[in-house]
Length: 185
Image (cartoon, rainbow, N blue to C red; front, side):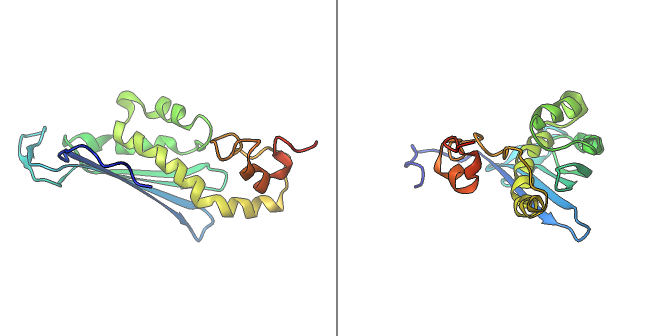
C-alpha cells in the first residue's frame, strides 16, 4: 500500500542511497555503497560560489568494504566524487581505519569512535549503516550454507530483532523451531 496523498508541495532535495553486494572469486565479499545528494533548483556552491545546476550532485560519495563471511573487514576504499567543499574528499583515506573491524552489534557506535567528528565525514559514515544491512542480506545464504557444516547451539541473531522475528511468532517457529518461545527444552 502506498503512502497517502500528500499536501501540495514542491520538491527541494533528493538523496539517493544505493548499496550492492558482490561475491568475489577469492571467497571474500565486496559491499559497495553510493550516496548522492542533489537540489531540484539552481544554487551557488559554498566553496567558490560558482553555480550548481538543478540535479547536479552536491554530494556523490562511494565506499567499498571487502569482508568475509564473519563480517571482518579486510579492506575499505572511500572516494568523494562531488562535495560542497574542495577539501571534503581529503578525509577519504582515513576510512582505511575500518580494516580489522567487524560489522555486527555496536557497529554504529564503533564507526563513530573510529571516524566520528573531525576524524571522518558525516556523509560517508551515514552510508556505512545501509552497507552493513546489505552485507547481512548479501551473504545470508552463503553463511547459512557454511553454518550447516558447523552446527551451533548459538541463538540466531535475528530473533527478537524486529516484530516478525519475535521469539513467540510464526516466523521463528518456521525458521528456528528449537528457538521458538513455545519450544520445549
